[in-house]
Image 1 (cartoon, helix red, strand yellow):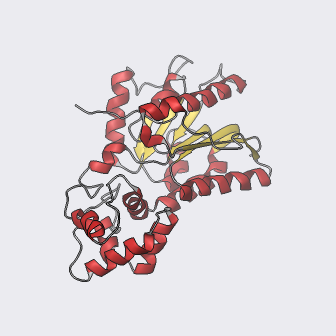
Image 2 (cartoon, rainbow, N blue to C red):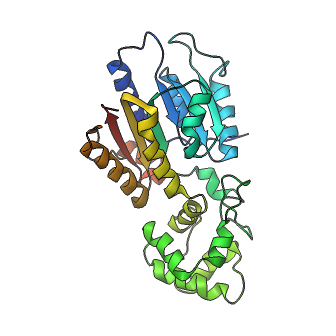
Image 3 (cartoon, rainbow, N blue to C red):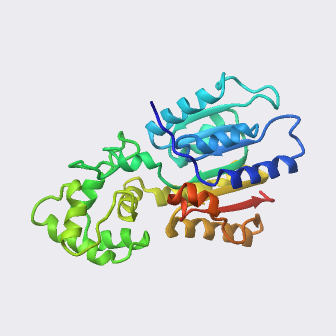
Length: 308
């Protein structure tokens, strides 16, 4: 049986969707259209669908697409049926990179959408999948799309220069990154470093033990899948796919990606395309933190595009 982890900050996200529904004057014609650019388990798409929205879900990870389809099919009947009233919805999903969003929207007949959403965190189960983590495996892959001819996490650990590794870990806000990089480089020269020994190597050399869910592993996953570049592609495509009055809703999990979103929003506001709705990012409340301590670093940022 597939287990699904709860999605972060769904109450706050629903409030923004409800507000946009109230502000939209054409809803007697169709429902709001949402591009969920990081479908994951489908938890946030479930929120959008329950609000009466139509959803286009995208994810680079094939397993995420399959999990989301199973999850949503259990909740909604006839999920592939086209909508013909406010009480009907549409859900379609594709394995895709962000560079393909406009092409896919055209394929399904969407000229514009009303909400662009992205949750930039990893699913918890990915941290323990053998192909996506360092949990008890010799060689970690970490590629969302295995058909792409790109470096795996193991190959990055064993081939990147010390300067390249320093850059990856520094940008992810890892404290003591130079010591970590030094130990990686020093030990791999003895023999190619098996991924499952990474934590042990660092621990033995005075670096606090690294759990698979912490920053060093997330930093490598981001590098493997070019997530920083993918986020830039997504942000820079928004003006082409969103209607005037639509909103961008981004959930970030560490400083590097949060800085990317914040910088983009400020640029859009400065250029007169709209306004930053969340002057300060919204963070999980005490109740959510009590239920899910792992969401403590999440930040929700919203921008309204008044002019396109």
